[in-house]
Length: 105
Image (cartoon, rainbow, N blue to C red; front, top):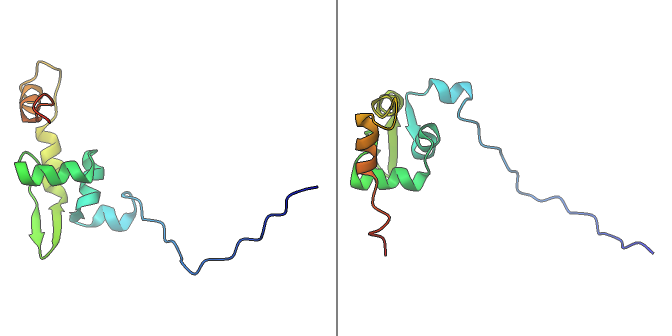
């Protein structure tokens, strides 16, 4: 004898998928929200928050409770951190900016 599975009830919640960063409306916007900037950079939102507190991240705007990043500032910040190899001065500077894992509790 088979086990009967009750039919699922439709939920009243409608989930709207997030628009990808590459959607035309997001590509053309000059300002990015924190999550969009983090996605563009390739770090977590939490890492971007840490950059805002400790420095070292891209410039940001604080408008009320919202944090915004000018797209060209984020792209310029990424360009400044480009490295040709591990002997590159930018690579050494990036290592110095990283917090030491040994000093963590």
